[in-house]
Image (cartoon, rainbow, N blue to C red; front, top):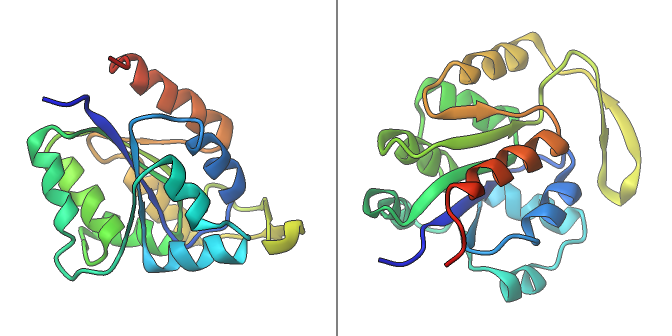
Length: 181
């Protein structure tokens, strides 16, 4: 069997997306999965997918059945990361809706007892984030978005992180269990 890999999903949130991507690109044995909105947002933030593809495989949301999810059943992935994650994706995951590549990956990871690390964009009533072109802006998540974030914290095999620093620590902790061979 090959070395188990990390699966990383990016949805349409720009919340610290540049910092998440910067960390992601330091990792080995990782596959990147993009929702349609995730792909759009990366372009808005000036990310060249060609450069990302030079470092890792990139899978886009182009098939109705999300064929790559079957890899969770074979032990191909040891961890699934969703970072950053939109409030829309969090709401779908909380309701068990798996109608996109990334929500389907989260669902199948849970069904296979593969741990997930989730970085929601809505984690506090008031937050600073970075808009495209680097402008810092304040956002005020709705009560329903904060409630969904609270609910996903209760899901089995799911660790919710609240910052890029927490994300880095959580991922590195998981990688300690899977040393590079």
